[in-house]
Length: 110
Image 1 (cartoon, rainbow, N blue to C red):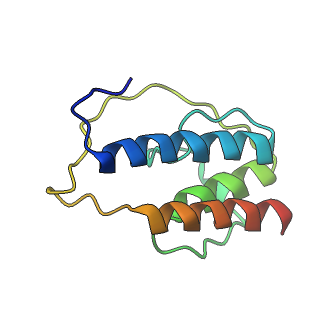
Image 2: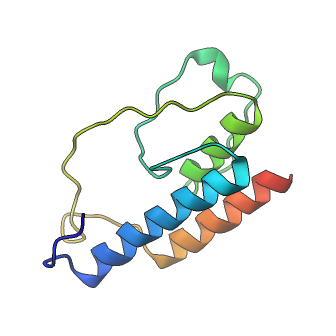
């Protein structure tokens, strides 16, 4: 749900996240409703053999892609949170979204 008071930044981030989640679901054939959630929990052995190359916002698509490709099914559970505003330090932008797209494609076909 989008409130009419959302700034263009928030609208872009919201629809960008929907697009990235849909793209992840299509590319990796696993339904993902919020790929950029930032809350991820798994057993230690899931990370065995997974080398993370990302050091920015493309961590999310990289870890998601590599976990799915390793044969794990991602189970999503609802969480509540209060997101940060751009004024409070939210730093994700269009460039990060484009990097996420490239990261999803890179690890799908690598």
